[in-house]
Each structure stands twice: as structure tokens, then as C-alpha cells.
Length: 201
Length: 289
Ligand code: SF4
Ligand code: SF4
Image 1 (cartoon, each protein chain N blue to C red):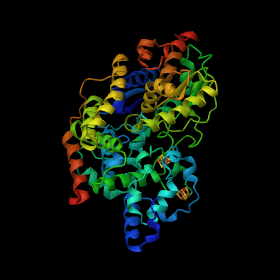
Image 2: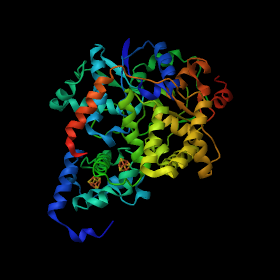
Image 3: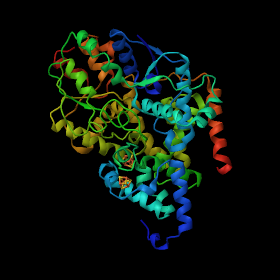
Image 4: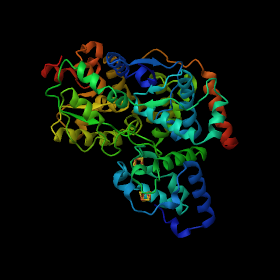
């Protein structure tokens, strides 16, 4: 965490807080820093920032730190924090919102592969309405190159091809392209979503 | 009894065995599954991180199709699909404007009336039949039941039938067919989900804890209902074991697989030979195959 707490400004902090609360649907102001969330968070010990800290950061208006910490990018969306929070604050939803905000701001994601994975997944559904492992993996690798360059791609292909070969051997690889016929509806939903977000991107 | 069925992408692809087992086992206890037409992906674990509108709208299209069948119940075996679809239905129940906005794009409108069930709820409603059809008792099988995250915890309040912190439905079913499930500490902990692909160190670390506890309790296998958990614990077990110095290997069964074995269904029909971590050896050793 940086020392920006010393430069607290009500204006900027209120804007950040309001945006995160509106979009995530979580009432961060009800947090009383009891840390029940932190004790159950499976990634907390390696991220340093635990859910309670993240909530605090946002309350203090530390936007840069809020978008750029390991919790946002390593959260496995296990929903433990929110289930145990006495005030029903789901930090997983906050993390999702912050990932979206980071993308909209064209900020470099802290973990490139996480960002590449999810954006490739959504692209793959937009194509066929269903996720097809092979097509998805291709898109994922393309996103990886776009975001992290060739070295990111090579490192990743090595580990993925191990899984791929095992899947082939165990007849768990699937080659037929699974498609939804009503893809025009899927496209319409994607378009509506883009319209709702406005010309921001 | 006929109920609706949403397999989702996994059960059509890498977890085809779960689809095959589910249909087979349920048909033997009087449940015919009617797969809903032309379904789409629910958005899985990615959509919430990318798009809040689509997170509700993608499962909503499936719900519209399901409502139009006129069936009263739909089974969704994959935990991730189950979670996303249930959250979509409940969100739309409380948000008529959003529902109207989504319905405007859909040929089959969401009404919100179909009951969404997970695999344990459907199996539990037929416990007596499962017991009756169990020609083989699973004696010697000491599983730890692994529920994972998405079957019991949700990003908002959901009405669920089992305990959130200590679910017991799987243990009950396994006991009824002669297995001796063990108590353990990681039944609802996270396997890392898609982190196994995009943040491997995190996922391997989480899985190592799950393996170590299961082994310390002297379990001889895992049982799960989630295709993502199954794939992770099964396909990455080798890598986790090497990295964390774990020597014992445990097969990772779907609940349907074990119920199928107890019914005397053959291994190739159940596709038990399609596991990454050997799943045949233990069953042979216990003379269940
Ligand atoms: S459990 Fe809830 S109230 Fe307690 S610190 Fe965490 S977010 Fe705040
Ligand atoms: S949902 Fe994310 S932040 Fe919350 S406990 Fe799980 S990993 Fe931690």
C-alpha cells in the first residue's frame, strides 16, 4: 500500500466509493473492519491485501492501489468472505467490479493471464454461444500475446500442451464445435450490454 | 418423472462422462431428463469479471427456454452453471425492469417459474430408490466428499437446501449405498477453479492443502459433483503431488459414478477409464468392478 492515505481527498474518494458501491451492489460503508472475511480468504496469505484492507482502501479513495493489488487479480471467487461477513459484503463482487474498471481505464492488469483468460472466454461465447475448449484456448493464447508478448505465450503453451496431451489420451478432448443456433439472440444481448455501458470504451 | 436438463459446456466436452453417468443413473431411478433446446453457455466463472449485464442475461436466455417447456423442474449438474442460473433467476425476480430489458431480446421469455435443482437435491429426493437399486454395497470405500465453492456459497443470498459451512447431502447418499465417508476440513474449500490455467501457482497451492488433508484422514478417494473441481483435482494431481512432495494418489469420482457402480453398471458404460488419476484400481481392489 502506498502512503496516499496522507493525501485523503473527500471528492476523489467519494467518487470512487460511489462507483464501486453502485456497480458491485455492495454497501462498503457498513464494513466494520472485523476481518472475518480475511480469516477465510484462501488467497489472503499470498496477496497481502485481504478483503477488509481492500474495502478500507476504497473508502480512503486510493484508486490506484485498489485497481492494482494482488487480491483483485488472484481472487478465486469462492464467496467465503461474503458468506461470513456479518454485513453481507461480498468482496468477490468488488473484485469483479475493479477488474472491469481496470479494463475500462486501459490499465495494464497486474496478472496478464487472468485478464486474458476471462476476456478470451467471453469472446468465445460471443462466437458460438457455447464454450469450445480448443477454440477458447486459441483465443486465450492470442490475448496472451496481445497482453504479454511472445514469451508469455511460450511459457503458457508448454504447460497447456501437457494438459492437452493428457486430455487426448483420456478421450476427454472434444473436437466437434458446439454451437447455439439462436446466436442472433446472444449477439443482441452482447450489443445491449455494450449500449448500456455507453461510449466509454 | 420428466424433468428439464441443462448440461452446460463441460458436460458436452471434457466432462462428457458426467453427462453419460447422470442420464444413466437417473433413468434407473425413474427420472427422465429432457435436455432443453439450443441452450447457450451460462458465462461460467468469467462473465462476472467482464460484464454484469451478461452475467444475468446469458443464463436468462436458458431460463426462458426452460420455462417454455412447461416442465416444473430443471437439473443443472455443474456447480458453476447451477450457481449462475440460480443467481440470474433470483436477481430477475427482484428486478422487473432488468427482466423486461432482457426479455425484449428473447424469443422465449423468462417467466421465472421453473425450479432449479442441483444434482444432490435430485438424487436425495430418490434416496429410497437408490438404496433399493444398489446391488453392490460400496464396502471399503472411504471417500471424503468435496463440495467446493459454488454449490453452497453464492454472491448474494440464495435459498439453499444444505448447510453452507458443513453440507452433508453427499455423505448421506454415500452411506445409503454402503460407503463410509469421512469427516474432514476441506469439503467446501476452493480448488482454484480457472486459476489452474491462468494462475497456476495459486491453484496448485490450494489443491495441495485439499490433498494433504484428505490423505491425513486416511481417505481412499474423493467424491464430487462439480466438473470443474473434478477436472482440477484429477488432471493436476500429478503436478501438485510432485511440487508438494505428496506420494499417495487418490481417485476423484463423480457421485454419479459411485452410485452407478453400486447399481452394477459397467465401467465402460460409466467411462471410469477416462480419469487422469487412475480410478479403476481402487474399485477393482475392493471387488466392485
Ligand atoms: S467481514 Fe465484512 S464487515 Fe468484517 S471486515 Fe470483512 S467486509 Fe468488513
Ligand atoms: S471470494 Fe475472493 S476475496 Fe473473497 S474469500 Fe474468496 S478469494 Fe478471498
